Length: 243
Image 1: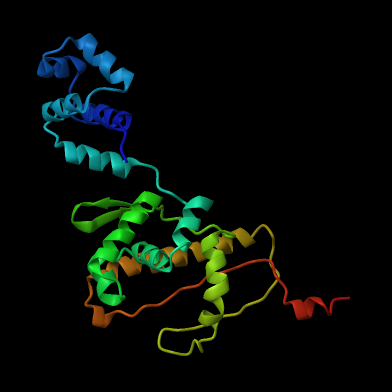
Image 2: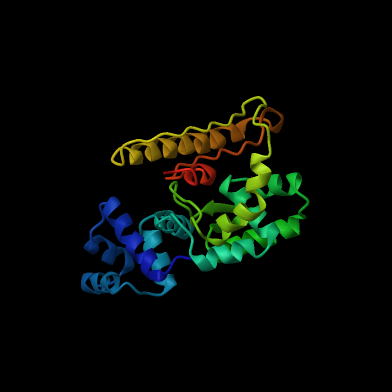
């Protein structure tokens, strides 16, 4: 949610971009230049005044609010309370996973047994939790950074460890486009982070391809789950045989 201070901060940027001086704005608003400077410096004014400045800048108020929203810092990680809220309802968790893939409401309700009313309800909940910004016509903007990940030991990852890991690895990984690689080795501690960077790049490439392929007909797309991991680890049975 944009605050008045956020709107005023963005107005200052728009004023500069339009190459309009405080004197120019004061003339448009029929105010003293000193009053305009004081008003903008204070960071608080009635929304009617914000709207008047928008008109002076030939800027729609809705466009201003959108630019403010898009300028907000994106979340790299949710709080413990946010994740707890997400896993409290299985259908809400489903909706969260769907919006991470940027599915539309129509895609969610046509693929899963959710009514349109339920879908709207869960999008509204995700908006309140802070994952998305809900927009008109049930569209939304993700508020998550490209580097977003669930908390390593948070409620969501704990849920998937308990309910999904065994199901995922029970597959044969021998279908078209599938594969499972298990590689063990000892490498320099200094170089280990560089491999983590490469894994992050693969994850980003996968996510970007997902976005690009949303233009394709659904019959040409298939749901895949890419799991990348790297950690200091030795199989417990082998560790027990150490000298």
